[in-house]
Image 1: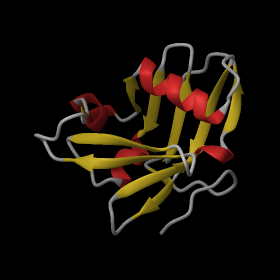
Image 2: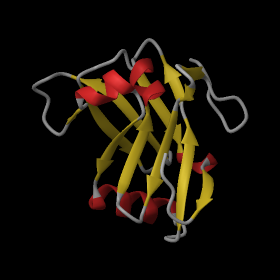
Image 3: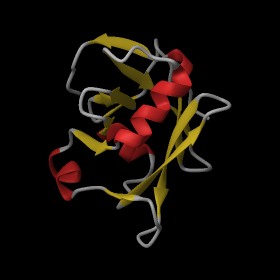
Image 4: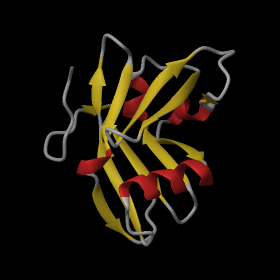
Length: 133
C-alpha cells in the first residue's frame, strides 16, 4: 500500500491525492490524482468508518446505489471533483469534534489491490476559513 501522509504526498499529473472537507458549503473535494489512483472510474462511492476515524473513496459500478457520477470535465481538464453532502459533513465534524470554522485537508493512502484510497481523518491539516482546492 502506498502511504500518503502530511509530508510525502504522491503527485500525479501535477497534483497530490488530497481530500478537502469544508463546512462552509458542505463540500467534499478530491483532486484528480485520487480519481487516477482509483483507475479513472465513472462513479465513486464514499465510505466512512467512525471507529477508526477514517474515510475512503472507491470505484463504483455504474448501477451501484449511493454512488456519485464523476463529470466528464474532470477527465478533460483535470482539477477537482466535488460532492456536496450536508449530512456527511455534519457527521464527520461530529465524529472528529472539528472546529466548524475550519476547512480540513488530508492526504490519502492508496491500496492498489483493493482500488481504494483511504484518508486518516486524525492527521488532517487545518486551513483557516473558506478555501477552494
